[in-house]
Length: 175
Ligand SMILES: CC(C)(COP(=O)(O)OP(=O)(O)OC[C@H]1O[C@@H](n2cnc3c(N)ncnc32)[C@H](O)[C@@H]1OP(=O)(O)O)[C@@H](O)C(=O)NCCC(=O)NCCS
Image (cartoon, rainbow, N blue to C red):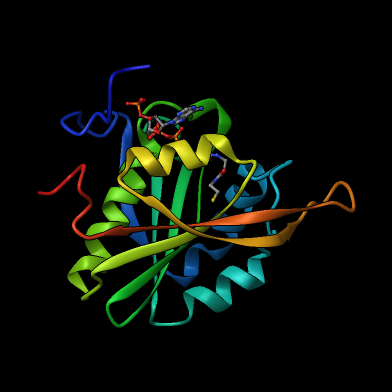
């Protein structure tokens, strides 16, 4: 692993990041199902994405692979006044650790900041150490905990949610 965030690196050359709306609900639902297999949380249906994306407060970005014209990652935010919530982010397993997750968060953070957000908050399952590290590398800090917040879909257990927040612009990518 490198020493820190690769802030100066470009978006991987075969990837295009674009803003999407309600028309992409089905694509986001498929990506969500593929990227969250086995991870505690609330699975989102196509209808959930459609409803959320129909809300003007929603901001979604999609990472597309040029060569295959296939979606490989996404991030979904909801913004209310000066606060935005990161509702969901995922990258297909075969395309992880290539900077795509960082790029969809950077793109979404710029969009919510342009719309007036001054901070982003999120909830992440306590046992999702990869995501917690990913968020820390982007500048998020842990700010609280909700006990027994998520249910697993493969057993009856539950897991706490860690709350994380960051001020905008993202400290790792100020420009
Ligand atoms: C979390 C997730 C979106 C990260 O996407 P990604 O494209 O692999 O992340 P990036 O390549 O942009 O990584 C950015 C930084 O995050 C950290 N990171 C990413 N994957 C990591 C891993 N497996 N272990 C430790 N750190 C990791 C690294 O610091 C990395 O920077 P570096 O490569 O310069 O060290 C991806 O792992 C994923 O889709 N996970 C499943 C869904 C999920 O857990 N979503 C979040 C739930 S709240």
